[in-house]
Image 1 (spheres, rainbow over the protein chains, first blue to last red):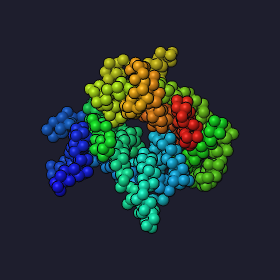
Image 2: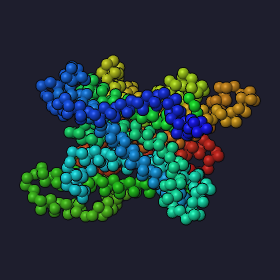
Image 3: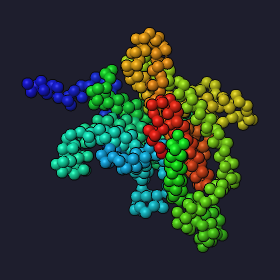
Length: 304
Length: 322
């Protein structure tokens, strides 16, 4: 009996439906490999005495060789190692900003959906306004703000990594709207259920009701939306870095490897192709993954 | 109707007021204060001169007073001079706004005209081979970095085959209608792809749901031909989600226009905003950003109006106001 129940455990069904979505399963495998590779890159560099930042100006635009599998760039840095270093940054930005945006969106959506009335109207107007704004010009201003004019610790405003924190913060600040709408819609329906009324009658505090009783029941679309937003954020980061407003050198990202891509078209096409290809493949993998999760988590979804 | 329009207008003005203050505040935080730049460029100016100049221009006031001054001047029609072009801001922006509206208009039109048949065509046979092909195209379209796609277009069609110009709005010698059209080919292609992929997905999903509804079965049962049932009965209903997406998409579309204009050196608003911010041209950046916001908000508004026209069941009161 237990074996049969185990066989039909919801988590197991979700897992089976997910594996049934072949592209999503392959994407998940690819992303796990990519993440392991970019995380292992510093160790590989250490073990073999390589350095992605090492400049070798006499050996620039080198063709692929045993030392440099994908050749070298315009100042002689190893392209493969830079791709791995850039991937580490791009994935980090995607994951952290998506997670942060998702938390902001969940909070706003829960508050709007649970309290309803004027709170709801106000928060949703805010959400609609943020969605309606021309995002990129705004991000450009935020990215151009001189941090030394803000009351920040002096060491932070001048450190190399500050562009990384800034990109994550700026993207999370605007990237919460989809999740907020989904969570609000979910919370609106769930809050009318009897067990929520019962919890309220028993004296459970609103915060506990929202987090413990409502949220677990509406988490599936949030997971899907967050996964899909990782891809969108990696794209956005690459755009900002391409415009020289995102990740700043000496830090590498796939986007800022393409900043000079247009000039490189005449000298070495591959330098303009590899980073873009990495962004493309990674983003499409996250999109397939989100699609697969949607099918797996929502049993009513159309089976493919 | 009148009440709805007034409400919407008030909402748009409110968003504009908040936006202008936020942008104005952020501008003050950007590197390169004009007076500081002047002092650096001229060794005979002392910091005391700088302070006097700032007081003279009202730059030592707190941010809200400076904003109030800017707003007062703006309302009376004085938007200031561009620091880099030495011309009134509007003289620079007017032709560029035109260029951007052409780029946006053609791209939106193309994306809508192509996504509807493509989405319907895929939806007619869900999970068939053609549906999968359309689906793959859509995934690729929303996943490709827009600037990279633009660069690939240049690489293949401008550098490789030399079919179309790689950049600019028109030839330097000046050109007629066809010359401008020729210059539009690559930017429009680049800008259309992203929205085309997104819109096609919505169109397909919405059409699949519509085809299952009772009124479609009724239409078939009373002998309406499949073509007429889909295009005459189904499409109008299936269009609604697409219109919502188009309305919400205006902001994203403008972002896409900025990237496209940047890569193709197309003299439009997006490129102007980028250059103005990068070169500390505050007056120009401020007004250009406000114009961009207005374009986006009006686009949203028009799409909402169209929504009501398309579906008589929805009244003006149901459509949210911002």
